[in-house]
Length: 194
Image (cartoon, rainbow, N blue to C red; front, side):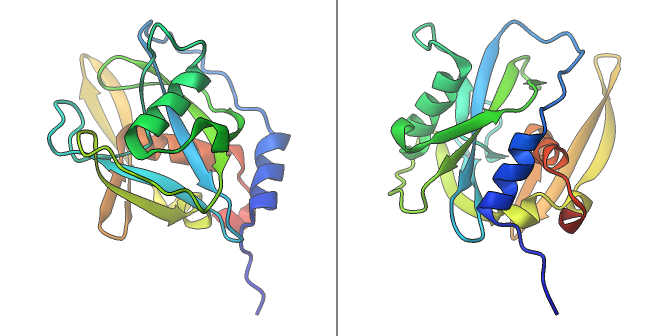
């Protein structure tokens, strides 16, 4: 029986052949970026962090490396790369940026741009204990399986918001991070991933 496994080349072909759809929503002026790191293995992985439980915002949540744009950042891509270096020691020069996904609005009022990049499998990660409790890799094929995401509609500030959830091992992936992964899945969607 033949299994349909997602290779890095297959992912890149699907990602590069489709342009992300632009959001028609009004986005906040405060800007941030996250790096969506795809680990270049024969069966690629998606690198995620669990934020430090000591943080004031989003403590203990699964996230991508990222943060607020600094005045010294020349672009949101630079923001994502700088933050990934600060949080988990991914050298900016080791990241092959392949594109961005549409910006999303965080619960804290930031316009967050997901920057998708390919990273080598041999990076010696060092986590910043002030920002990150754990670092883990999820198989990309599993991450992009749309059927693994469940939604919950919540009402906040007089508006309805859809929040996405998924489990991987003992990690709850939810909120903006789950939404970004789900959007990436839609970006590269093909029947074998569902």
